[in-house]
Length: 240
Image (cartoon, rainbow, N blue to C red):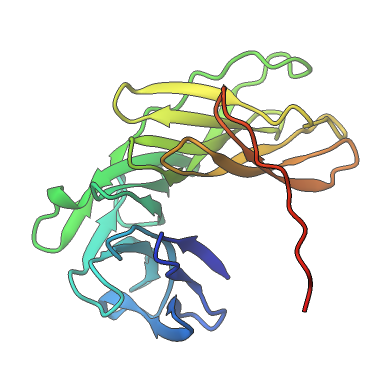
């Protein structure tokens, strides 16, 4: 499973056998950092820095690697300890975002920076949970959990939250201002009282990727551009 890609076309992910992988120019390298027993890589920036999660001594903290060769290893703990930490994205400024399992047993977003590392270790800072808006069709819904899944070089993170109706809704979070912006795909629809939008990625132009569910509980991917921009017309290509 491939989870991240950078401008050079380098891919990171997991090979399904407990190893993280790095793929470039058709050459695949697998690795498990920090002396762990398994790993998955989730994000890579244009410098080749990699973030992900590994298993060690019954815990699943996050990791940062300066390169796929294993250099510059840093363990990433969540605000509540090393327990379950999922770094998802890293930008050129080496800001890292993701989510962790808190003492309440729920998932919450975090942010940290490699520049804060001391002795090969980082403790992430919790991102405040959103004050969720009223959503038509979900009267009285309350916040349950959130995941941050992507980040761009402008400090804009993306993800989604889950509420007490088990629906999920997308958001943007500005690391510079601490402001949430909530956003669902317009084609999202309820099925048995549940609707889903997750925003999974953002680039430096503000283009978004993600998926949503329709009235038949079928999931569809989406690509969205900021206001004022339009998607290019599709072009045909011949299949060899």
